[in-house]
Image (cartoon, rainbow over all chains, first blue to last red; front, side, top):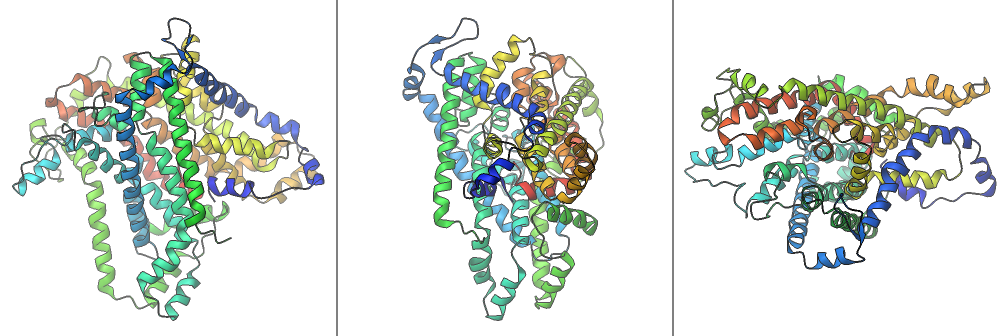
Length: 312
Length: 310
């Protein structure tokens, strides 16, 4: 079903010699059809990746030729306190917002499943924010809603609570961004719904006959059979969250403030590269980001052996 | 509304390999037969409606507030249309050095270029991966799947250097060219999944009749994969319309600004007293997404259900 399932399948099946020969049948046509993709892969993806790997070992400001400096960019990272802070902010964002977002997605998917009247309507309502969530317009809205005279404080005022500016306070600014990410739980929810539909109803019928309670049915049937989907959503949302940029940029006015409390890794990278034209360092940061994302994805795949249940 | 949306969605899901085990009506009958008391269902609906309202409240409030005078925005948290002031819209439209129509047109041009690029290049690549046998196919397929997960940041610096040396900064080419070269591998995967669900008998028959691959692709596969093309077009629309990072990097002249850049410039230029016009232009920027969502949601839902979204 998913890209991840696909990769898992490829790594397990093997082929005979005769099959391998037949596999070359359409070489000419294939390279014709794949020509744009090959061009894109080499010129837009792999080529620039290799160049950025090279640049990460240089000092480069776009005006003078890149100067090879060995590992200097990487040793500089060790002492770069703003970077350490950015890493902290990003980790908190990823590891708080993704579990919350997936929990909300799973809870509502389970509520919506099993022949509920108006399902398509509810699904649309919950899904819409995930389409709007990455827009600048919603970031603008968030800035007002959580501002000192914003919507949240107007409501708090009704209860006699004196609000503060959630955006301007370094200890709450990040949580407004986390809220925004949780708000977009609709996309993983739709994936959960599709997964729930593939669980054969006979399992539930059998469990019911045996007198299993609703909670037991959820824990013993739904949850185990849904683990591949949970895993899939987890991998994707973590990769996605590490790359968040727009919302922090707009809400903090491009600075990652107040007091660097919303300075996402990508925002710091952008500021080094495109505001300070420190392209060598930015490239090094980009590669470290790739390694971090790769490491977390690898850990996820490794850990999946212990909790993901494949029915096939 | 519910049933008409339901039907095509589940058929797409079935075609693309994920079989829907039961028709929703059947499920409903089952739920009723299991003797669930009515009041439990009512509570469930109340919970769902409250959650839905909470989710959409800020967005509805944004729309309603955009029609209120600015000082009212800070006092009135209600979401009832009580004021209908279009002044925010006329003021907002002309606040920046160019009228908002310029940014709208720019965004539309970028979006159209990206849609055409993705449709042509991704469908070609998908046909090769789904139907053709060629050496190294598995390896290339794995490479393709891996690029879906690649962060844009590891390529953006050299890409920027390349495009700026070609003199393409402040043109739409850096945004559109990658799509023409099928770098949105997510859509290749989506289309591969779909083509695999089309019976191979059709192209085998055509092949026996002497059709070459370009013809099979154009005459048989493409017409049958219209739902997948629609899903691609819609997702490309929304993601490109919302895209901020690459547009921020490549478009720096105000007359080349797209909608997200214009909103950002607006935000930086204005003091907090102009939330009204700001809100109005935010609403303008969200209307196209909302319309696409309204008319294309079955393709969106089936698209993320079959491939897992992005």
